[in-house]
Image 1: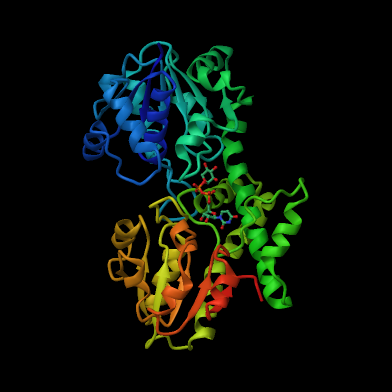
Image 2: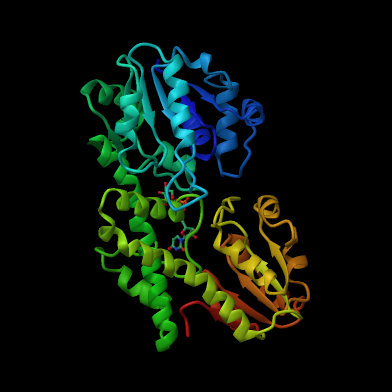
Amino acid sequence: MLKISVIGTGYLGATHAACMAELGLEVVGVDTDAKKIEALAHGELPFYEPELPELLQKQVRAGKLKFTTDFNEISDCDVHFICVGTPQSKDGLAADLSYVNSAFAAVAKVAKNGSLLVGKSTVPVGTAEALAKTLPANLELAWNPEFLREGFAVEDTLRPNRLVIGVTSDRAENLLKEVYAENLKDQVPWVRADLPTAELVKVAANSFLATKISFINAMAEVCEAAGGDVTVLAKAIGYDPRIGNRFLQAGIGFGGGCLPKDIRAFMARAEELGASPALEFLREIDSINLRARQRVIDLVRSELALDLKSFRIAVLGAAFKPDSDDVRDSPALDIAAQIHAAGADVVVHDPKAIEPARKRFPNLQFATEIEECVKGADLILHLTEWKVYRELDPIRIKELVKQAKILDGRNALDRDKWRNAGWQFHALGRA
Ligand code: UDX
């Protein structure tokens, strides 16, 4: 049986480690954060992700998944997956590669002869080739980008829609085929690429997804100006199989730990490569995305008053998307904070993300119950489309608020149901 290590046990690493154990490998997860390792070793996750805690506990109990802070414990592994973060750097758009560099260096020190170091982190193109030059001749490097979505991380890792591997030898490809033998039995598409292409696949995919979302949000702006309805427009264009109906949900735009930072890092890298005109459009994608947040704030003002001081606003949703407690670059939380800064009395609810949101914005008010959040509100902002919000009873909620006004920032609520219950219902891109 192959033995692998997973370096970096954040969102990507913890998921990869547990899923690879589930697929039959012996796995050691490594992180420099002792507290995190201690928790994972007990089957506890420091973030919310459906199905992952159960899988983690199962594999830890079965003894196939271990966690450590000691790199010496991975010296006998055949393959090492580097899954550390590449956040946006503090002083610009580019990605901060310090974690990736130190992880590769730490593994290289202990790795046995002939082992394969596989990068999974999202990096600027050219990183893999540069790292390969730093490795001793008895070690090999490959790149294997990750496409998992938060909220579906387990499903996406156990049953990926493709596996992309950047390699420089058949030997490396064959080792990775052994790692992914169970996925290959399911006929998963397998794409072999060179190192730069493998790195580019990831940022190209995320740029395309970001473009799709900003495209529909641009159409929402036009619909608002022209008196159209973007939800109908999206449905109609989505029937064309060349366009497809997914990722055409207009609203307050994309956030999270990937899309925003990845398109920015991609632009920064293109500039270094002398190819910035090719990605100039991504600047526009970013602006359309940030403009969606501003449009909500403008709508709030036009609905209530220029000065928001005497108004109570209930915000439903803080996570950047449902089924996640991730608030990194969350459009919902950003809007809540901006309205709070403008003087409104803001109360935020989220089924899972209150604690991470409070950490980021300690001055915001939070409510653990929806009823408590909406009580006495002049306006409700629906900003993250959790299922519990779609299932709300507008008649019951109307008894609690001061004014029956709601703005659906995700185009996910049933407009007729709310209007029939006597609500003033507003949505982005629907005149
Ligand atoms: C994304 C990619 O989908 C994934 O392949 C990659 O590995 C990591 O980045 P994730 O960040 O989990 O995954 O979220 P995703 O489901 O892509 O949503 C991103 C953002 O776009 C969310 O804020 C979501 O609310 C928003 N979105 C998505 C829209 O506004 N409209 C849509 O139609 C779809």
